Structure formats: C-alpha cells, structure tokens
Image (cartoon, rainbow, N blue to C red):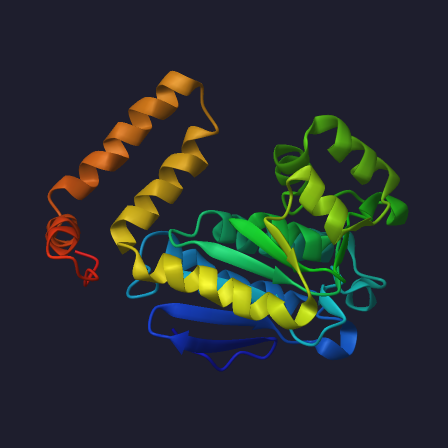
Length: 264
C-alpha cells in the first residue's frame, strides 16, 4: 500500500496497526473529490486482500474536526453530472470502509458533520472526545445523507431518534451519542488516542482470521433473520477449525503463554 497521498496521512503505529488521518486541517478535514478517490483506493482492496493489516484507526488532523463533511467550496457551481460522478466516488469509498475485512475504528475529535459523521458511522465503532459533536445537516442545504447516514444512524440509535436528527439537521453531543448507543466511549481529549490505540492493540493481538470472520458474521448476520444469521455464523466458524492459529491458540492456553498468531 502506498503512503504518498495528498489528503490522507498513513502511519503504521505498530505492525498490523494502521493510523489513517484525514489531513486537510485548513478546511476542517472537509471531504473533496481527491480525498474520496484516495479513501477508495485504500479501502476497496481491503475487502478481500488485507495482507498483514489487522486493524485501522481513522481520525482527523487537529482537534477542531474529524471532518466537517463535503467540501462545499469545491461543489460551488458544480454541474449535475459532475456532482453525480463525485458522489459515486464517495459512495464507493464509504461502502468499501463498511466492507473492509479488518476492523475499522473511528477516533473523533471536534466536529463530525454530514459526510464526516457518515464516515465515522461507516466504521465498526466509534470512540469520541468529550468535546466532539455530530450532525447530519444535509437537508439544510437541499440534499440528504447519501453516504450511509440514513441506514447506519437508525441502526445505531433507532428509527425515531434518527428521523429527528436527520430531518432537523440539528447537532448532538458526544454525551448524547454515548447515551443513544452511537459511540462506544467518550473520553477527555488527551485520553482519546491512547484509549483507541489500546483497543486497537487488543484486536491486533487476537487471531486475525477469527477477528475477520467474527466481524463478517456480525455485519452480514444483522442484515438477515435470526436463523439465517445463525447459519452464517456456523459457516464463518468452520473457517477457523483447520487454521494454524486455532491450534496455536489452544496450545498457548494450555502452555500458559501468549499465542503467536500468524493469520493462517
């Protein structure tokens, strides 16, 4: 994976743990076409070929914003066909984040508005600074959420709450997001990244095939009825029985040592 992106900064914090930073702080990390293309380039291959990657953390540069959403200055005067083509790039990028085979954690400081909020919701779960706030403001400018917001938000906070938030466009706090089940933890700003990285390390140190299969079972099982989901779970479980990691995990437990998982 290349790292010379114009709008994103990639850093391998430790083997298997990638930190991806939305890096346009001068515009509160607003999403322009280039950022959409670069997110798409990174995440599309990860659905099937994660390589040695085990967990990804997405955050925004600076403390003012995770992302303020789509870059409306770039969109000023944009022709309809150009707008459609740009939005297709965002759709492909966001869907690829949701379909990424390895866990993706959002670390949110400051504003996560519109497309920025949708990107956080596209991740597997969210940790937020106490100063973070969220909003899906699209109806106030004549559009609507189109990066998964109308689907991911109600799945996180319930249909009625999501309708209120999306149809009014009003912002909500990190504390509210925690109470409603949208975020997993709210922390003082200085403690956010240490907490996120600690969680990422626990995922990184677990058996990678097990993590990917469990994520897949949850993600796809929730789209079906219970019995279909249970059948899917069993199929996902079967994938691990013949792995070297399964044998290593049991051996390490019995030898009272930390397992050495290799993803095979």
